Length: 267
Image (cartoon, rainbow, N blue to C red; front, side, top):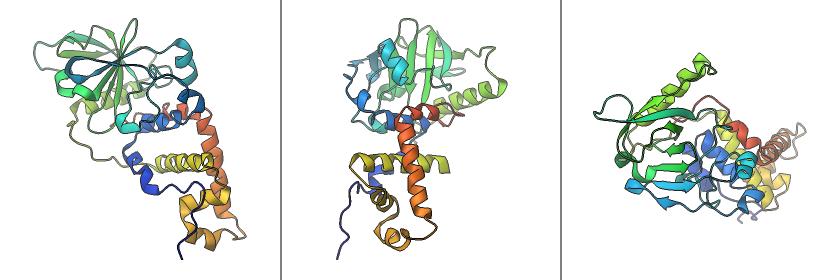
């Protein structure tokens, strides 16, 4: 006899795409579940050169509350996401200057090489850029010049406020992202913290579907294991579920921004 279907019983493979998510992607997964954000009208893009997308800048209130520069459609997962996080919440964002490239020397960017893998939010004083290589993503702000008028060389503005370690980490991520083969979609190795975030997302979705704590356990561990361990005197499984429920509630209440305040993992 098959197990009775429980509340919140989405299958684990529904979340398989998160294997290739980085911390910015995970933050987006939380944001698109935010009830207030979901009520916003998505920004309307227009087509740019070589298929890139150009978005208008979101209002100051949106930037302040959610930390994003544009309003992406909430029903799109990370593969179709065009949301840009503000440098105010994402310390990995680099400030760069763009100068026309006469020769392919140095760190060169050509829109023709990236097409629809590149998204720009057009601000008053900068072009805010999201670049998606084959793996991960790269965020930088073009504070001088433009990338819309042909190949450019990018020069990083390393300010005196940056620590040497953070500057080195940002530059390493920058170089690696631009040098990746756009067709390389091999998932990087992920940490325990990453898989815990995925479990918290599954927990949140189960709770939204009306799941009890036992339903959450079945979602994460399976019916057979729950039958065997649920009444164990140590309550280890119940404690694990309670911790994940607490984490899911923290993340959904704006805690997702903490995912962005980490060492660069965009490679």
